[in-house]
Amino acid sequence: MTDFFVSNALGYDLFTDVENPIIRAWNRANTIYNIKERHGDAVATKYVKKIPKPDWLPVYTTMILIANEGYENIRREIFRNEVNA
Image 1 (spheres, rainbow, N blue to C red):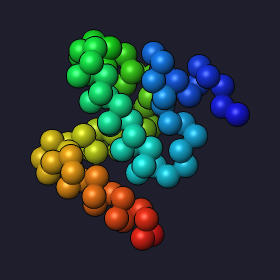
Image 2 (cartoon, helix red, strand yellow):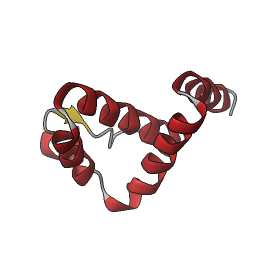
Image 3 (cartoon, one colour):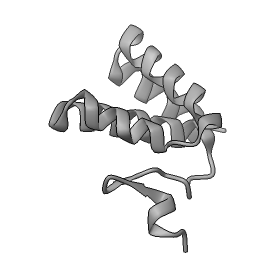
Image 4 (cartoon, rainbow, N blue to C red):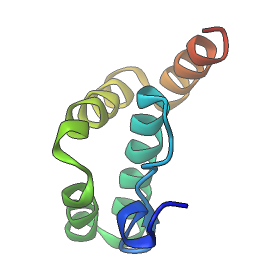
């Protein structure tokens, strides 16, 4: 079992136990959007700082894709590719 303080930040899951890096990035990007919507930029930034630095790029890339192509399009594409992999 993963230590609570390693797998959670500010009460939000960091998804450290998710082995698939694409799904992990997707989950983290969604969490950032949810935190930002509910608590604002400052709390979302605190969450981002808890994500290990090597994992920032995939999360950032996912967020850019969502911004450019839309949430539903990216969600559909990620899960279509990962389920059929």
